[in-house]
Amino acid sequence: MNAEIRNNWTLDEIREIYFSPVLELMNRATAVHSKYNTAGEVQVCTLLSVKTGGCSEDCSYCPQAARYDTGVEAQKLMTYEDVIGKALDAKNGGSTRFCMGAAWRSVRDNSDFNKVIDMVKGVNAIGLEVCCTLGMLTEQQAHRLKEAGLYAYNHNLDTSDEHYTEIISTRTYKDRLETLNNVEKAGLSVCCGGIIGLGEEDEDRIKLLHTLATREKHPESVPVNALVSVKGTPLEGRGRVKIWDMVRMIATARILMPKSMVRLSAGRNEMSYEQQALCFLAGANSIFTGEKLLTTPNPGFDADKEMFELLGLKPRESFKAEKEKEIVLS
View 1: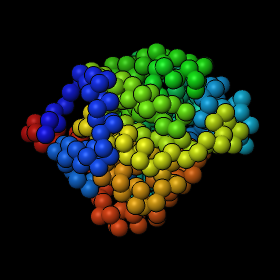
View 2: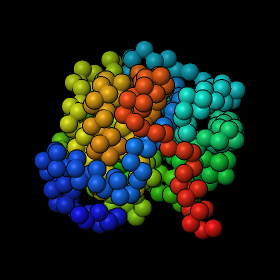
View 3: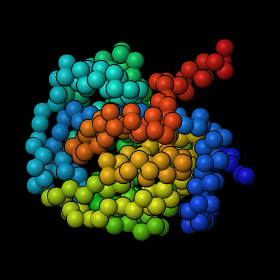
View 4: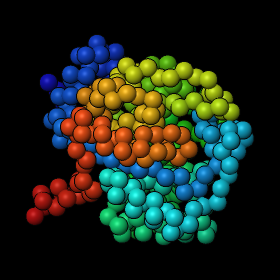
């Protein structure tokens, strides 16, 4: 089986993989996953909204956009003490990566950003990998976050370039790619994936994967989100994404980006253990745990602990990639 790491995938090659019979696709993805990763090991992450609501963007899926009436109240930035408390709770619950999200269009060089820098330092000091998702940022801002101890930065592409304008009009696909480039220039890990269930076609999913898999360096983490339809947003009333669509997306991502963490993200709250097991078989090796994903429901620590025991999964330790590099160099 051909399972080398490549950055020159063609759209035709990706289509062939994506549309292959689902059991054949899963079998291939499992083999690739076993070659490049530790079978049964799953990275456990927690995502906290440190600044909720009031966002000026018009992302059609997002309950935090100020222009939509979704019942999400705009709130000020959380205090340092509250964030560190939540990070400790996450660590005690089994998480090894802690991601802080702020409903900003872009990072501004102001007192709130200075406070986030302090939060990054504090979370890093308790031994968790720190991730942020704060909107668009400059290379200089990315360097500041890196110096504070940030490990990864999340900035999803959401969908294909062609479908993007159907979902968001307040920024461009090029804007998103520019932020990813700034993150890479600062030496931060890139966390970038997308959402399925936005009214896109299979071709849009294929093109999204093509954009990610043909970057000079594959994203370290690739979240695969199923739309959680929220009342008051333009995508209100959309049906649930079929599990086989999630499996197909995850398996294709795993084959294209063998070493990336493929994260089973939003929508997991509506999946049974059996459905989640299919996603793990397809190559997912990362989840968000904790009762909320920013503002939408998510399985809590206890439910995930039960699932891990049932499926024989084990949490990935913090900074594993760095520790393995040190062993190789020593």
